[in-house]
Image (cartoon, rainbow, N blue to C red):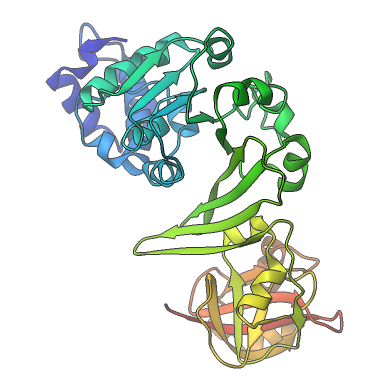
Length: 393
């Protein structure tokens, strides 16, 4: 750490260049004797990410930022606060602490928190920042979390882990046992020290494949923010043998959509041709795979077993987007373009052989406007287009 970065004139420089091209900054060099231009560029890149992801940290001029990859991999304040709402008790170990955003929020709920981070430089940054953020109930350890557990006799109410989702070649991985540390292989060690474990996993991980690797999963949380899937969270409880509950959560400003059921989806959907209204589930429900339960819970009909679009005669409040169907048309270019004089529309493809990009090119349509086109397959296995207008909540 170079604490000269926190001097007032250096911070003023960083804040005044957050919107500037980082390559131009690197070419100009550093105006400060004790701070290199590479250090300035690194702080600018990371602080730029924090501005949106970690607003309360961004507003504190004494926070020191590590390399931007650590910011990219960290939780946002929104998702960290959600995870903190899942835990309770007096002690928690964060096995893979990282930049420490999750630990910061756990410390608001748990009396004693330990943050383990094998990267010593990052651990020092976290220790510094916690002092600036007035966190006094968190012990920061610059060591491997599994090694700490192996040599410890301490019991915790919770253990939290966020295994790394990139391999040695820096490629994204799609299976739990490819993540580091290998939680499934070490689960007995974790349960020796805590009865409850909370895992933060990549949203790209396959839920069914993950459950085949892990035992004692009590809850699955598919967490989205503004309809963008962010995290897959698993709550494990020692000795749990029942089926897990799965929760689809979409956090939006002023409104959080929640829907839950058993996993795998126990429902049986009903089917019908398009009626007056069309519904598209939010990203969390799509990840959770609760397609049949959604049909049952909201008394909606699916358009096709593989389309995951729903319809009703009367409007219902739905965890996702709702539309009024204006017209149903075949996917014929001449007929369709006659209905879109402005040549502008929002396109969605569900259970359709062509992608949105291919459809936009084929029909020569620009993005935007008030018209929404859903390219899909109906119950007769014919390709159709639903012309819709969005219903605002």
